[in-house]
Image (cartoon, rainbow, N blue to C red; front, side, top):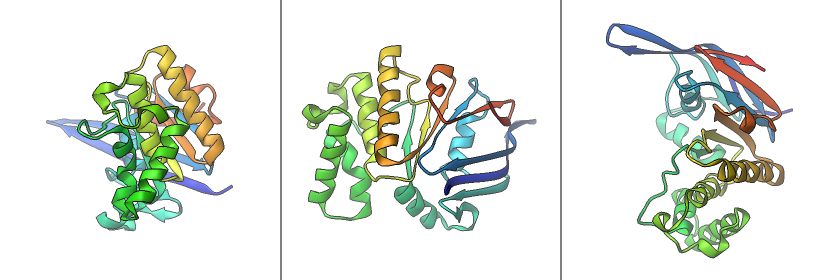
Length: 225
């Protein structure tokens, strides 16, 4: 099975004044193509730190991270940015939609950044908004959408580039149980339909339950199960 994400012996320490906080203590982790993985941990356990490292948004103190076989430490900033745009999709606890843009424009942004035809990007954005059940809301701005709808737009934006991996950091954390279940179901359906691997970071064991593999992160130590 092809590994789309692989990290070995990841260490990350933060300094707060004289205090040294070990966020990750030699984490080992891998994700197979098309698989579903959850990382469960309490607030402050290092989950977001791990996601930032996996996504190339931060660099470890030591250890190796490979995305689709490419060693992140050997890439320039521009090359890392290109790899993120081509191979990774990000969903966060807060949707981070641009308020002045419509749902359609927000979803199309990653495609615009690739520099392809605007018409093609727009059609693809419409297709993915339809997949998340928002074909009737494409011209609405974020303020005109519910919390669950905004998160579905954010999911469509992450998936529109058809990435190898989705990194979802507490994607249901701001939603009630009904909307959280809907967003989780959507991600699982798109994982099955598109073959995109999904890595979900969550404090909620119910969200982690349907995943193929579950890891626990506690006091900087990552273990399976």
